[in-house]
Image 1 (cartoon, helix red, strand yellow):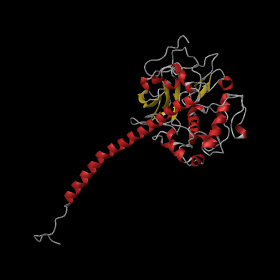
Image 2 (cartoon, helix red, strand yellow):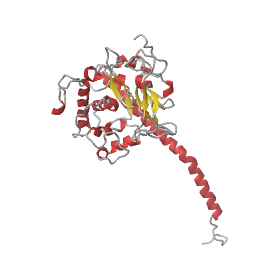
Image 3 (cartoon, one colour):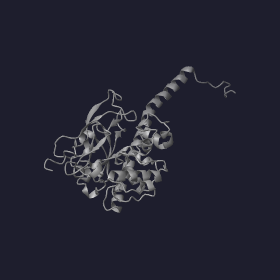
Image 4 (cartoon, helix red, strand yellow):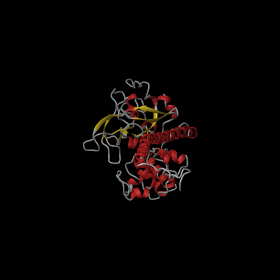
Length: 351
């Protein structure tokens, strides 16, 4: 084919083609980070929305249950309202009753009839939310309880039976045995202990406190035998706009590294008791206290030694040698529900 002048049309030279390719590559290099940042911002929005759903449900639950904060409500020493004979009790303690209630919910809402009673388990830690899911009649696992950046837990959620069969790694504690079946139904968001246990644990009171390692807890004054769980009211909160209710165990939305919440430089969305969700830096919060010795001016401190299923220490990896000492901050607010995390700490010297 020729043009009107009888000449053949001119094609691209090699240099022109290379210039076009270079321009396209430059545009891609400029646009890809912006797209990645937009996607990351979108995941932060989803995470914030998840926490907001918790806050809205908190108010609804309290309205329906005489101002009670959501947590396991079955009590020791009483017949338990389970449809499963092995969970009907009565059992001796509130902790055992809470375990029965947790297994009951998982059997019904997650279709896990294979779940068995777990000895020496504090289901309020990482699983307190399943009471709210039961109240909302949600099927489990439910994406709402999982941060979209928590990729390992999302993989657990998508294939709980594969998790049980050790097909998802790195392995979590007890993965592959009866106790480990609970992990795909855990949450990225932790509920503060004061929402289900007393503000103070010194005699004659009893409470839950931090053990030496970041993911372990213990009882004061034999709470496991005599303590009272599930008696906290939303009206017990004194500074609702300054008191954290839920937080991400590991902050995943800002900076190069995913951080355990108690690193001072960690920054994460937090759900407050006034139903707001705000991004805050840990270092801007009060340092907290130790409920076992509430008059003591020093905060709770503990060792952070990440497991392979957790986020590593930046630049140091996993244990060994990644052991660091951290403070409790809003996990252990000074004064519990009576205290404030942002805007000044309560004085408990005269408690």
